[in-house]
Length: 118
Image (tube, rainbow, N blue to C red):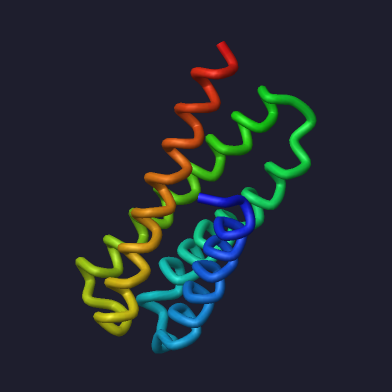
């Protein structure tokens, strides 16, 4: 996948997560979960933007590993939302699919980069 397409996908997932969280009802029971999802889900794109300014191959690999962690955390929170039946079903399902794809892409980038670095 081309770098610009991946930049666009990471921006799109951030926007989709912001919209998903914005549409949730406000109550004490779901104060923490939306905030956590918002933080990790939007940081995928921010951290990917940072990879373009990596100072070395090792720095690039480190930044990619952060993206993997943030994507995995996002996936976790979305699965928790699914278990609790929070949020609109179709919107949540699409987010889970996209985050899973992004996690697979960044995991692949990380593995390839580590192999080339050795």
